[in-house]
Length: 205
Image (tube, rainbow, N blue to C red):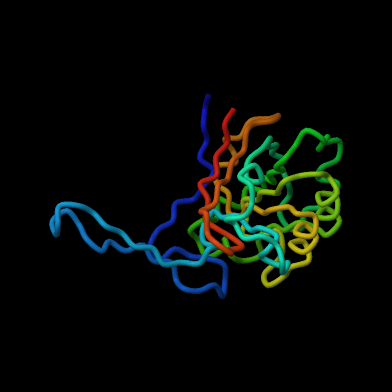
């Protein structure tokens, strides 16, 4: 079965959502010349790179990652080509969401990854689309942009979180996804009390 990696690599000093801290660091504490083996250390936000946001990100009282069942992070995926700018609800016209667990919105924004443009004026979803998705019985929504909301916005996050959906942000390689359904998986680290985690998102078809 072909497996497609839908994740960006986490690298030292990489760009992240404006205002997030600390600056991402991937350090080599020891190399082979030092002690015969390599040891690395990580220091970054839970929202760095390709990551998953759970309802706890904006809703108090929700479970942390360690308490969420793994089934929440996998399911039948479906990719939809979407416009840049604000994605309207009619982007899903004619699409049957009944068999879908994860709706993936492919805008092409990932082409800006690694450039200053990526974190400026990225594609977002409209509140009407967020309401439609919140009522669709999905497990989550994925995007190839930094957020379903504009910079410092939260309206769509609130609507999706209220329905128990998770968001997978900064997805990559969406051009490799097939038409129709595929198996989607984005497993987070088992971080106690955390609202988000970097993931290795994949599609299997």
